[in-house]
Length: 336
Image 1: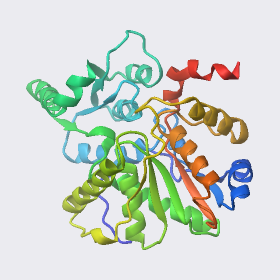
Image 2: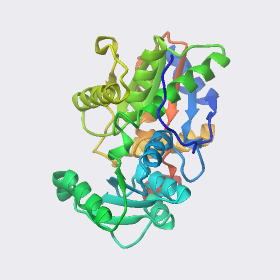
Image 3: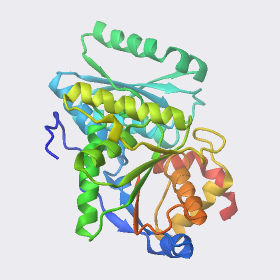
């Protein structure tokens, strides 16, 4: 693949490790004729800035510097991993950060919100109904607010999932496939959680551009299959528009599994919490209940059903999010 990457600021510790999950494979995959399970440890992209969002924000930060912006504005839930990572990126690079947060603030900071505050990000809280109905207007308000005070702001969409942010996982796909080749295989399947669509879009496009037959499947944590089919294609089309690279849309293989969303976004059932506990106990792998835990639970169910029978190697991309685990601490009472 010969692509001219846009401006990028190196922030992540790359490449992240690719590790086999021997005990998970033995317990959940081998009995059903399934593949060897590997994990791409993108929870280790950094320490506090950890997770998949940092790959995207390398390119967002590059654009901010190229455009001489001194402020970043973005949005998400109160426990948004993306907002936490943006807050820390801003602190590292000396940029102001304004967070538009969905939800009522209880007055007590925990998890990602605590890190937002430690990083010095400014926060504004909005009830969910207003947030969803008025998000473009809220971005405009805060952009004008900083412009009037002599600052230049770059607005970042949810999860940095657009034609700029997906560069992070085009590069990530190339890194992952190189890791696999060094271990003597090309994966038949790559699995990731999909919440704003950008990680899945980058991996899907990266695999297409690299000319491999690897199938990328996003396990949805919100919305539905139709939404992510549309969102992934929109992000790729936006990338094509920004980069000038043509994409054969007919050859895009966009796979979405929306069977394990559960009660809704950031809400999980007990089996997900038990999966998180088991992954930690069997492999020392800490998942979160919003993204990686749901997707990993779904993967285990699919293995049990024989979905990946006769496949030799499958890679699960751990997208991070461990800070979001702590506000769910009461859900692990079964460990007492």
